[in-house]
Length: 594
Image (cartoon, rainbow, N blue to C red; front, side):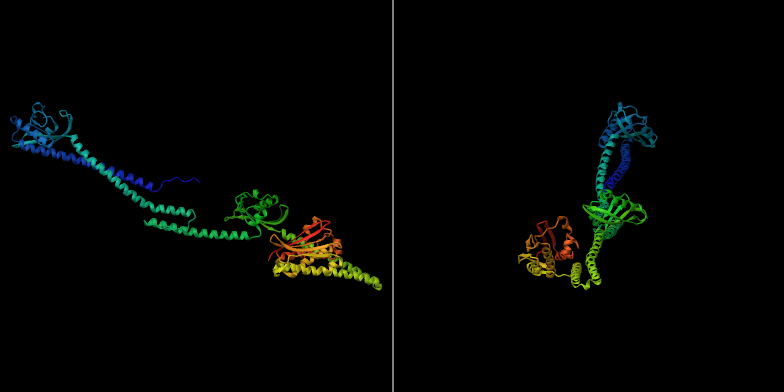
């Protein structure tokens, strides 16, 4: 958005004030000048008349040619004193005396306008260019009355430029006064303008604070009632905005908390298929950053064709749609249950779509494991039960009468019953361990790993001696860990029994413990046939057998290593296996130190 160009309010108000002031002063000056000019003109006329009448009184009894010298001297003396040209003439126009010229050489003045008016008994006034003095002159003539008759005329004159010079001096004073008045009033106007605009500037600055998010600040201004009311309105607006923004921010945080805590992935998409929101669960599934994808087209973020197709369908469908989607993340296959629904605005218009993903991978994997478990249990139980049933039927069919045959069949039945007992006992043990692991029922206390190993070796000594296997211990008695003695003993016993069962006669099974990289390490190694690498990842699964025939012949239930794995997890540890075919295997248990 383009920035609006504007001037400060002060510089909008102040020039107007100055213009009004200048126009007012000019108008007043012009009017005053006109009045002054008129007043000065009237004053000059009155001065000329007063001087003329004064001279008329002095010469009214001496107006004849014989007194020309006296009259001329009077004119010159009075003219010098008053700076006025004085001319005295007879009714016929002959000049008797003049301030500046020789009367004898002057022409007849009887035809002058002011003289004609004076000869008629009036006061004659005139302004014209004097050919004698070569300048504009102001004339005033009065009659000299003697015995009720006009005996002559006294005319006074003043150069107009002298009047104008005096008027010009007054005008300069008026101009200087006007300029001073303009300056003073301009300063006063500036102060008044600043007083008017300062509260508005404060309101502007406060509005900028509000725009930047500083809504806690409050405006405190003084001035006219309108300005104060505006400030109060701004404060109320800020308080309401702050409250609304706080409410929106709280709702947003609550919404973020809900979305962040959801294990389901959530993606909100606008009508242009740009991403509006994505919670961490969805970002984890798609291997993206939830904050960086906002605003980007969904096609740039979701690179799975099946998922993109589902999102498009969700935006076009009026109803909620559901579909299972397979998603590959690296080498891992994820099974997602996707729900899609159209997003609508306040006016029920379509504004986008909301897609929710449920990760069913673990659930489907558990379902598969349950099915496999049921199938394996059924298979493991079916074999001894079938054998028992077959031999019992054989005995019932007549083999019972043959003592040797009957005894042989009953021993087989006994072995199968023992096998059933082992399977059931291991199943119950595994169930108890899993329930305890889920409910955290097992107590872990600091204990010596070497002591637990010694107990396990004692439990397996008879079995090892029976098949000619030597048990060797390499123990560090200072290694301590948080452990549950009976459980850890059961796990180590299972590992030792497996090593004994799959080791050749005359070989050695070694169990050791020590500290490595800040953890307690237990190793159980044998010199058996070893295990192919392809079997190692699944070795700790329930009922998984590398050599099924040999495992059953050895009397195992197929649950021993699964029990070991769960017991180690209860101890917050890890179990691994390393094996080389033809050389033997080594099981490694890593536990935290106490």
